[in-house]
Image 1: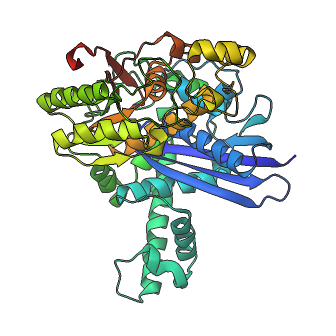
Image 2: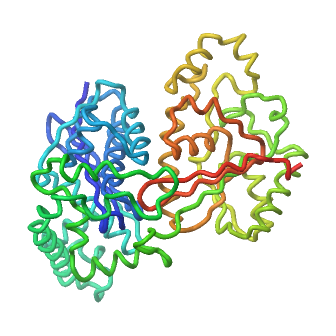
Image 3: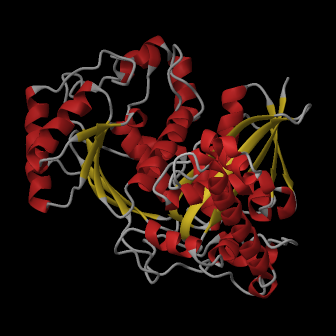
Length: 472
């Protein structure tokens, strides 16, 4: 059995502020770096970024070998202690991330170790690269990361790709600019570190109960963690990085969309969740996932979509439309988008769960044909439908990643997501921090609307508009 080392980190330039994470997977036996991953995640707290880094590292390790064992090393005492089960997770914004991370590998295959910040330079560098890329309006890429390292070391052959603003062929000057920028960042961070011990004596800036947070927002776990964290080398990356002078400060301000304000962290990314209209299978209450016949809307379903479009047009708040790739959602989204004068984007992460051999069957028929599999499915989110369908746990992991990507892409905007029963219930469940069994306690009518607003501190608020009377 292979063993991987996952090193992860996250930071926020402002806490909350423009944030990113980095993670690296290496072979435990040889030390060889196998995978690097990093991402700018918009405005978030240190803790959110750290958990996102952990999750990304574990997912990268699973892609390499789902049967491997993993040893996680991070300089966040908070994350290590919580994931090891020694500290409770109190903050509702942290619980879903911790739950997702705990389900990437089976229990017992992942161990956790705290390490000093000075030993976590690789992941820290990736997180900073992701934030720098976000400040430029770009996405982090492994190729760009390698180019930056080459340039910083004087590798003139790739410096031009990192600093394209210079004259053509001026690779040496480009490398010098990169080296200067990296040196400035290291010097500023080192200078800020000397002042962090005083900050650790009380709640760290931005880690108290956030002003303007949504209903259900609570004091961040790290409010107590400023003392309980026990980080001997000052794990306050957000404060250190926010202290960087000049370009980084201006970049951080540029990243925040117009209207963001320190007092309330600005407008949230608001997702209006529209379930597709009826199909011929909907009134019969048959399993209809992403692995079945992919039915189109019925006449009733098209009428429902038209009425939803009229209502949303009256409200006038939708700025973008994103749909699941399945026919019933694309048809619903097309009807609404045409009324709103918008294009339809498609995201595969919004697809319905694959119900395997249960596709097209009623609940009673599944109970009769596959009673043991059904009972297991009802009892555990890790259980898959008969025939290799998708578990609710796997659906949740997929939806969480899709949510995070869309939140980062649509900060401060109102976006219509046209999707299905399980994705909508899952997004609501994750926003509420509710247990997996809550999926069986929600009623979601065809063409109904729900709203989730995602705030800069990682919290969310939910509005349920599950009333389709206006659509009939």
